[in-house]
Structure formats: structure tokens, C-alpha cells
Amino acid sequence: MHAKTIKPFSRSAFSLVELLVVVGIIALLLAILVPSMGTTRETANRTKCQSHLRQLGVVNHAYSVDNGSFIYIGFNGNIELNGVPAGQARYWAVDRRILARLGMHDGEIANIYKPGQSNWGAQWPSRFLCPSWTDAPDPWDHHLSYGYNCYKAYQQDKNAPRAWHPARVVKPANKVAYADAQGWHTPSKQGDYKRYWDIYGEAIVSGGKVVYTPGEVRYRHDEGTNVCYFDGSAGWLAKEDAWHYKNDGTSTDWERVRSIWWPHKVSGQSY
Image (cartoon, rainbow, N blue to C red; front, side, top):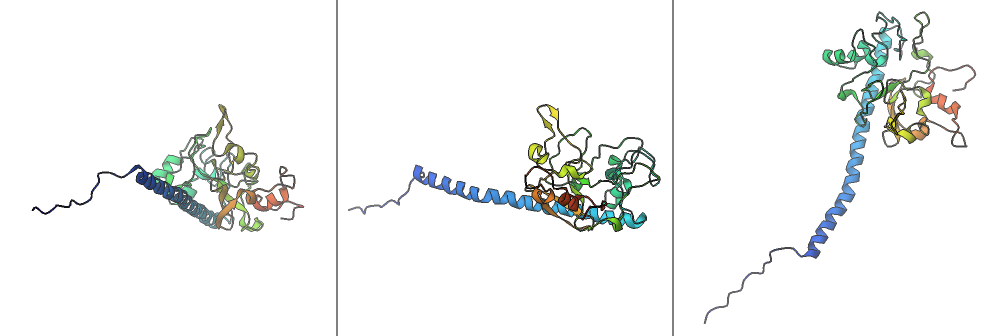
């Protein structure tokens, strides 16, 4: 009599039910992990962006030490300023002294500052830009993700400079010097998110029409903006904390807005 051979149990494939269970588990894991990965990436971007802004604050202070305690101006009004010929350094983002202090090398500076040209289109290297910034073309060809608060800080007349003086800034720890933006400046009215950001976001063209506004504050970090204050510190502001409305929800509460965006005290104001 021959002994009966028992073959081990085997099968060649998973059943449909088993496959569906595995797919379901993978889908569940992805649903849990993907959002957290996006959050982690944005947190890292926000931190890196704040580091850039804090560096701008340090440069601002260093510049003031070397220039009679005056912080550099936003725009020179196309006149000679501090030995730089008219038309060659029209605003802060192409000023060689600023770029060098930020740590840009000669080749990078040469690509930004071009003597004899208007220098409106600053092409900053990517390593100095906000990592969450969307590089969209604009009418002035800016490649720049931060704007300087130039409110009443323009140089229109070399005999009447309007550069900021740190000692004159009211509550510098509360007053924004730089913010996330598309262009080189952020006049205070363009922090109005209901008028700008909520409608256009990072886009600058709508319906075939250019809607880009130079200096519009970009609330690109979880509906908030990174800022650098005049004391050199940096942080994040939710759009509701960067711009305030009255109880009607549409009219600007200028008293509260001035407390954030207007560095110099205006007569009669309490901020």
C-alpha cells in the first residue's frame, strides 16, 4: 500500500474581497497622511519665509547704522540719492548695498542691478524668495516675493528726504516693515483682503484683463501673511489681524489699520 501524499494548501491569487480590503486600507492611510504632509510642507515654508524676512530686518538695521540712523527708503523718485545716479537705483530691491548685505554674490547682483536701466523688474534668486510664492508674470516683470512698507517713505525731493528714522517709528514692534507681496512695496491700503486677496489671490489676470496691483499683500500662508516689523522681529498675521473692518464688515477701521501699517504718527491719531 502506498502512503497518501498530502499536498500543502496553496492558491495563486487574492480574492476580490481581499483586494478591495487592501485598497481600502491604502486609501484610508493616504487620506490621513496626505493632508498632514501638505501641512508639514507649508509649516516649513512659513518658517523659511519668516527667516528671509528676519534677515531683511537685520539688513535694515545694519543699513541705518551706516547711514546716519536712517533706514533706506522704498523709492528714490528717480533722482540722485546717496551717490547713486538717478535712474540707476530706483527702489530698495535693486540697491546694491542692500543686496550685498543679504549675502547675494556679485553675479546675482549684476543680474538685478543694471546701470542705465530703469531696474523696475527685480529678478531675485530663488533662494531669497518665499517658498510658497507663485511666480506669475506681471506688468513690471518682478521676480520678488516681499514688499517694503513705503507709506510716506518715498524720496521725491533730495532736499526733503522721507527715509524712515527708527527713532520716529511709533511702537516699532507693532509696525510692519515688510510683508509677503508680489511687487516691491506694500502701501497699507493693499492689505485690504476683501478688496484684493479674496478676489484675485496670487492671480494677476482675470477675464483677459490685468488686475495685478503693485504691492498687494499676499495672504499665501494659510490665509495669512508673514511680516517683518520695524524692530527686526518676524511673525505671521492672519488676514483678519492684518486688516480690520468696522462692525458693518465692509468699511475699513482706519484707527486699527494705522496701528499696524503707519510707522510714523500722524497728528491727531492715537496709535
